[in-house]
Length: 150
Image (tube, rainbow, N blue to C red; front, side, top):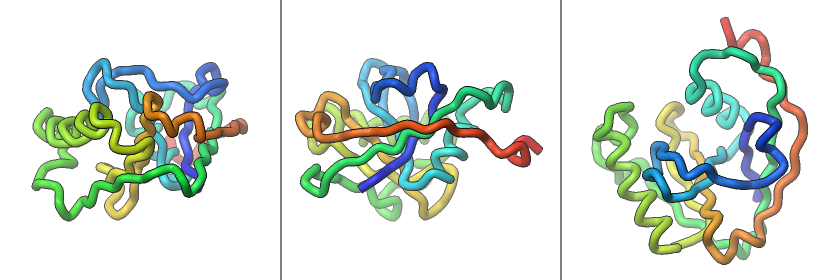
């Protein structure tokens, strides 16, 4: 299976996590965010940046893992109302799920619903899970279409 991540080229030489808090993890818990398709990876990158700024020097990471790597999925229909809010409560709902997944080492891969695009999924990768060594990636240059900044 392949999933996608768009990242500044200076960070594209390795598959690593920052440990910063995000929707599905608290500070100090390392997780790599990717998307089920390249278009969602693009949108996720854009909404999490402060404006468009310099769109040069980005890379598309194609992350692949074999079918033997266990995947856990979060069903959006089972999440409480407000999970996708940009409020602290929305983040708390998601972080509780993600933090438990990371700490319990349930799998190397967690599919989660996108908070910005209904029916699309993001992919969390646990770099501390034993199956992480089975995950490979390749990079290629990525350019944002100028029309996205209109």
